[in-house]
Image 1 (cartoon, rainbow, N blue to C red):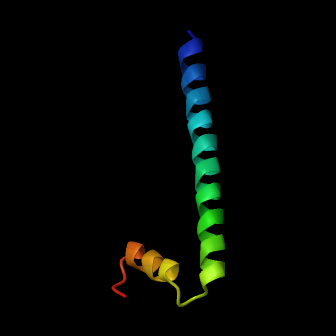
Image 2: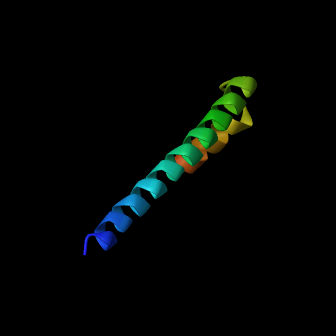
Length: 55
């Protein structure tokens, strides 16, 4: 009776934790690339294009 809701809550918590880990690693690598190339580099232009700007 209580197994299904607890399983769903645990599954949701696991997915959220995994998503946060993946997002943090991607953010750290993008930040490192951005700092290595500077503000005029290709990474900053790519990030602005992804955000919807035309640069």
